[in-house]
Length: 214
Image (cartoon, rainbow, N blue to C red; front, side, top):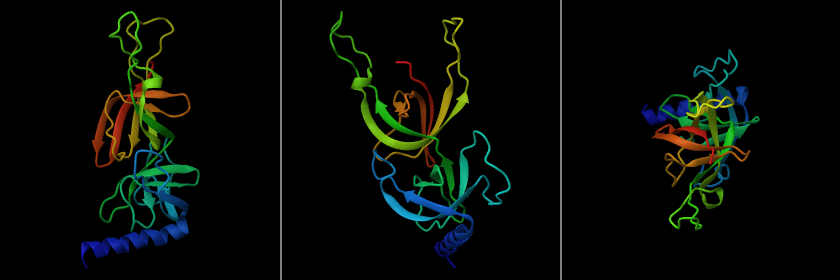
């Protein structure tokens, strides 16, 4: 039997197991930069575990967003979202014969590019970034955002100063949008982050970000 035939049997086997161990999830496939959870692929049974062996022997660990998916993988692609059971995950890796790797999301982000305020001031060449002039590039993207490290102290070192935390953001590749340093992420809860570093791989986008103060 060829590789494709074996993969078909593996995919169906995962689906049979999910009928007994899983619950109902909706699978979405983003097709553009806005509203990632609009294009429904299918509804199916799925279960998720912290190990690829699906022993379901222990709870999820704090700060560890990676999960392995048990469901029929006949129609699955990297970047697909699965929504159900009060959780949202996206597929970060899918290899032949292996269960898909997914990332558990805990925020929904919009991405914008900082614009410039060109209103005249003391100097007609002055320009600065404002919320009103930001250009929105993408909206409605569930992501994983977790504290990566505590960060550095403000060089002024005032008594009330605290370290500015650094955050790691994991998200799928957005069709038509390249994530680069200086872009801003807004979670709709009053928190805005600025991208300090961006890495695009076959798994998706991995970003380092910090709170935006301007």
